[in-house]
Length: 176
Image 1 (cartoon, rainbow, N blue to C red):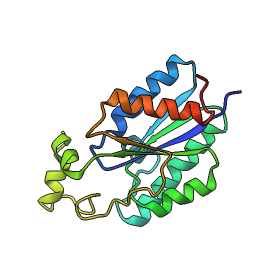
Image 2: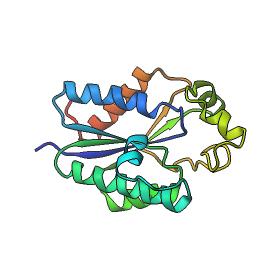
Image 3: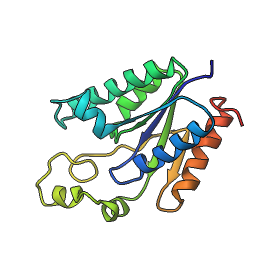
Image 4: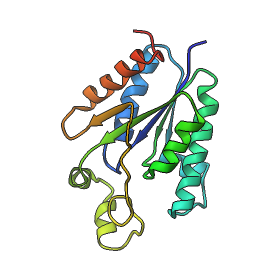
């Protein structure tokens, strides 16, 4: 059985996590790999319904996503998570819990994320309509040492996806 992995995409809202994860998923499927995307918004609606955006509830949500990703990865699936996961401590806790944890920092400057914001969430947060919004009135803690950094203000989504695939090959999760 092929080795599963937890590909943990982290970054600000609008950085490109969902877009890049879909491209990586497409390439993995083309290579006949089992893959699942655990999108933060979808998980929050189904698995974490009722949680708020407090730090405690965000941590609970991330631990739940990590638990499901681990179950999948133990069965040879490459589980891609696309959740903001703003707090370094909880991401590091997941890294300590799971030995196949690959952190992918989808990095874009705040102003670029605001320009890309199709839902208008940043504008609502700046207007005070949304509280505890990551990057505005709640912090985003950059990873210290992610396995992969995608600079989405400088790279195309294709370049970012290729970088992720290449790293998975080097780490032994994918054959070339």
